[in-house]
Length: 128
Image 1 (tube, rainbow, N blue to C red):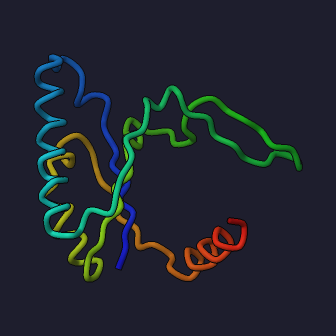
Image 2 (tube, rainbow, N blue to C red):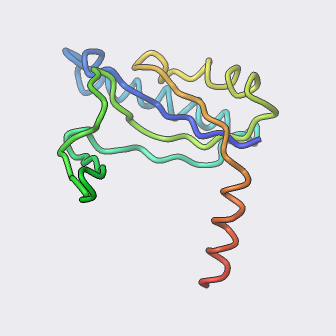
């Protein structure tokens, strides 16, 4: 099964940390990602820029409304996405529970919707 893991970070966790401390924390995350790669579990990922660079779109009265920043009213913001291969949700939980990024904020793990993903893949192939 494939999973998308949304890694959140709490901005308060970053406060007062030196560049060296932040770099060391990222290196821990990268090292664990390498472990996931070696096990055939890491399918990819993307780091995101700061939430202040985000916009949120929604429909309001039939018109698209663009708002600066993320929609969520929370201290935790999405920091990146990790694409994971695992046997099932429990296996995904076991793998991500050892990720050092959990110290920076929570991870949300969602199974990929394989049916819709297959439709997307078909449309991609039809256009190319």
